[in-house]
Length: 370
Ligand code: NAP
Ligand code: ZN
Ligand code: ZN
Image (cartoon, rainbow, N blue to C red):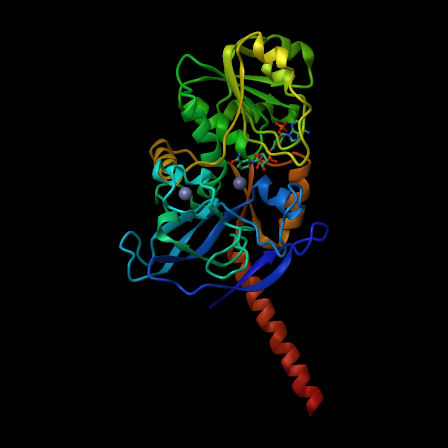
């Protein structure tokens, strides 16, 4: 087994702390990646705090992983040592069902998520990217371009694909008026993509302080969602809304803004349910309320290639792993601009500190014995 070091939550109430654990040896079809950067998704926080119930501790979160290939198995031709590589929310699936055959592995009933998911190799749970290395089957490893800033590429692996996929699925493009709700990790990527696809983008935010940033990111109009007069100006006018909010809220104020036959797609997964939406709001204009989950491997690669071609990355705040608990607290207050990314080089400091401490304790032990 490979000895790894990461940061883990041991329960829903206490901060993440350093954690030593093991990963499987590199199998014939596996890729071993030295993790350089890992984005901090609100889903990490939901699972660490057990918002969705069913968290199994310890949890090593992190599913926006980029780094360098250290080693490949003898049946891997697609990657070689030294290549850049990425891993998103999925590390395995059944590979046989209709969803897998249609490149929609995220909907496979046997999908294995990057962390907090039963790991058929070890019999334990999977451990994510708040760590120094990861071993992943080659089919679930993405190619990463050298043309983009590597740290700012990490959030594409979840925030990127989660917003790209529904915008593509509902054919958002030129001539569409599109609403994006919430300017956090997902929301700021949604604004960039909707703008790149040629849509007229209206950003709905609860944070007036984000207005200037929203314009810079590609929003054509900004609406403070707490202001009913501003909201009213967009009644029955939007073709599509992508709602990225991480907390329960009134959905009716947004469905009312859709045109006839418009759709609001939810990607946020709050810990408690939204108040029930008004059926009247839906039926009288044949509006739809929908949901979407990340994206399959093929589409994730397509999104990464699109980003390399159009020079799209995430706006990030780079942090050492030691600041992860502070980052979580700021995320809870919507104080993120616009994705925290962990620089895993900070883990080496930790590893060498640990080494030093164990040497010191050895020394003092030796001293005491003397
Ligand atoms: P984030 O960076 O924390 O952004 C969420 C944004 O929602 C905040 O910045 C804030 O934007 C807005 N917001 C927060 N609390 C709010 C409230 N009480 N009322 C109204 N707006 C509020 O989170 P994220 O990483 O983008 O993730 C967003 C959600 O998507 C999470 O629930 C996460 O678990 C989920 N997610 C789903 C998928 C999927 O596949 N479906 C994938 C990844 C993440 P403003 O300041 O602009 O209002
Ligand atoms: Zn995520
Ligand atoms: Zn399957």
